[in-house]
Image (cartoon, rainbow over all chains, first blue to last red; front, side, top):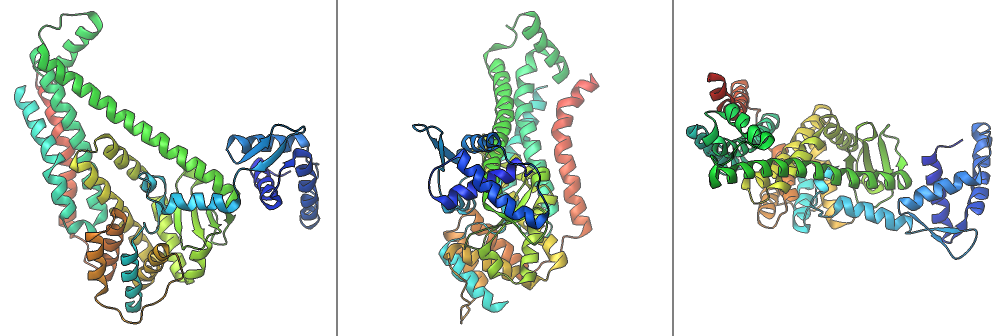
Length: 128
Length: 328
């Protein structure tokens, strides 16, 4: 059985790929299919994925602010809050942006430089 | 014990203003970044200690001949309602200021830690969903992005180094190894703890020149330390090229284009960084100039002298606070 972290990733991949809201049941079926496909290659995975597990994963993702559910319908339908690209952009903004704490949060190979400095460095590349 | 508080106040002022300005303009830290780092830490610790100590000693002057007797008398006032009339306004004011400053420093340190940890946790959560494991080894992941980006996210056993697709495409294998070894040096040498402490120090006392200068210098010194580790396995030219490619790519947002004619590249870089540049740009400029025209490390004697200086710097305020009490 996959860990919760791996399941979170698999669920998000499905939601990002699907572009539309899905119920826990639908997600479970899709996950089961993909695990079976993998299972054939890597030996039998064994236990079947329970819908409650998928619901647990979804509520964890909801707490992290990555997934939202439509409350009008029953069963609840879940969808991704932002696209994969938007989340990547969010991360890169943290890395490349000028937030005051950035240097303390993560250590970047090169800090942000202005266009003119970059131009000088490009020229420098001719020397080395 | 008036002279003790006077000496501590002088020490606090010297460490808050002229010393950091001289040190931040000095050239030798680039030659021995580790020793310079020790000195900055000693300045910050001794500065804080003498600042608080000066106020404490002055505040306690009427009730005790030395710090220990004074603290005992103060405890009597706080815990057993002994009369406080001996203190008077200015002494009470100094005592309150010492207590507030101590609380402020500790609180800011903890708050900064909490903020940094929260941002890192969020970042790590997103990475777990977005990044894929890299062929470069455990603890290294690749994120799907065109800009050449490399950074590490410290977090004990969960520390992770992140590379972008753009970086992998732009760099030769040797250059990539230099980048990875630079980032691993940050993690192995626990640079995030230094960054945390100096970020909190600046956050707590932003109007004090020493805190800004110290943070900027420490930011650039850790990059030099990490560069030195990378130089142990990769050549100087490889590292410079990696820095130039990553820096030009992250600003231009596109693929790097080698320029046909190159002028006096380094002077241009330093001038640009000096006039318009951010802290990060100045750091990049000093890193590159250090790599282009390597200076010999400080002599062992010079390094030892600075290190003894660090010890004395810490010993001086400590001795001023404690020794009068021990002598009786």
